[in-house]
Amino acid sequence: MTQVSFEALDHALRRFPGYRLFTVLVVDPGLAASRRLYTSDPVAYPCGGTKPLHHDNDFFREVVQGGRARICADQEDCRRAFPDHALIDALGCRSAINVPIRHDGCTLGSLNLLHEEHWYQPDMVPALMRFAEQAAPLLLSLRYVEMPA
Image (tube, rainbow, N blue to C red; front, top):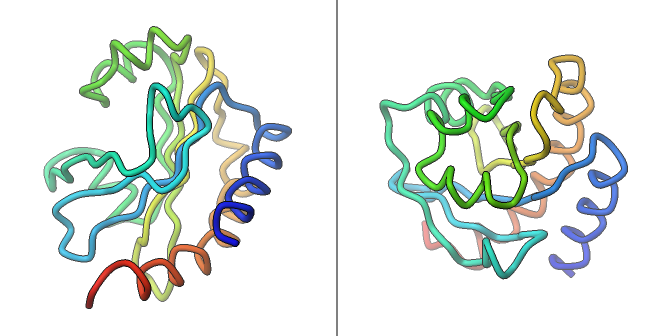
């Protein structure tokens, strides 16, 4: 059921705003790491992959703590933001948007879309936040099943 729901979200996001890579990350309750639950490219970015959460970076401050979408407008922004920028660049991705998935004021995870340079614009954020709202029940159900309290 969950995979089907993520695939429906994938299909919708492919149409608007579009992407070259789409992933869904869930934030570990201890805020030590995020884990990839869904990917549009299982070869380059397989499900289950984890990334440490550093409390001193923009992703943590803006997306996890602040609950705000974060845009990396160009290749240089992506280089500064992502330790795996070389792989991202090799996939032709030179801009990104991270959209928080939230429930009761807490960030559960994020929708992460990457595309060509300058693809993502601030006026896309409200629609993407609505997509993230639709993903929250999926992450909540997974937290109770897969992640001990």
